[in-house]
Amino acid sequence: EVAALQEQPLAGLRVVITAGPTREALDPVRYISNHSSGRMGFALAEAAAQQGADVTLVAGPVEQSTPMGVTRLDVTSAQEMKTAVDQTVAAGTDWFIATAAVADYRPVAVADQKMKKEAGTDSPVIELAENPDILAGVAALTEQRPLTIGFAAETRNVAEYARDKLTRKGLDLIVANDVATPGLGFNSDSNAVEVFWADGSERFEARPKRELARDLIRLFQSHQSNRLPQ
Ligand code: CTP
Ligand code: CA
Image 1 (cartoon, rainbow, N blue to C red):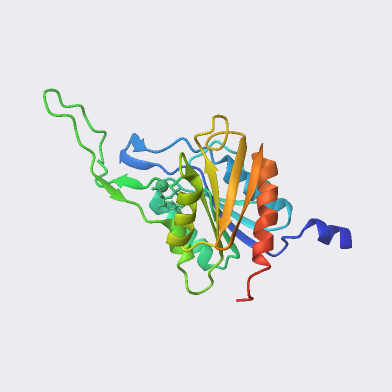
Image 2 (spheres, helix red, strand yellow):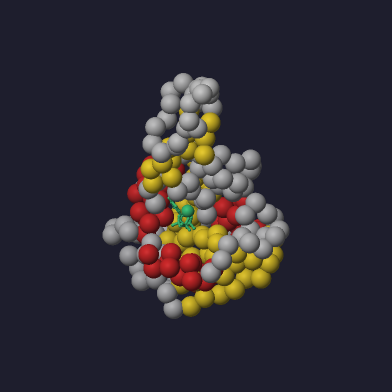
């Protein structure tokens, strides 16, 4: 009994995680997206579920199998991801972890038929509209606000940009990784990150994403226990 409890340190904790890219439709067959694999989010979902958390994974289009015990909600666009996140978080959530590479913009107009090439005309221009910031929306909640954790993939000025996102979005923690390093981070099996919060930071040198997931969860737990009861 005691041993079982020790293996489930996150029992009763409700965790919502976004993962993967979003796809923003141009017409029925074309879209704008990115190369996010979803691996980091799926690894975090697996690690949290293994430790007894009640995990909901809101996943964009990715080729990943659902970790055991995890509730998976599949979405396509950023707007669909936001709807799924807002509904799930509103039902009661302790941690919100945003690993998704949400498309910052979507095409303003989505053609209902496949667009045709028009010979002899100018190249088309795609007009874009900004997508809602899913993470900033959760961080701004005034009631039932979960411990809110963002991810930032940067190619330069990593610490500066990450700290800026931490304050601008009102987050508790931000996990930053330098995607300029070949073989690390985006679309890779290994990752090295630095985590920032209001009055501190911690570096995690390169390690497999599964191992990093367990280490990050331990860090999130230490921030959870610092919180005042809500
Ligand atoms: N994020 C989000 N919704 C968006 C954009 C980003 O939830 N529309 C989340 C990501 O899941 C990530 C964090 O915000 O946890 C940072 O994403 P990032 O793309 O680095 O930040 P942006 O604010 O979009 O800034 P930029 O792309 O200009 O660096
Ligand atoms: Ca972005």
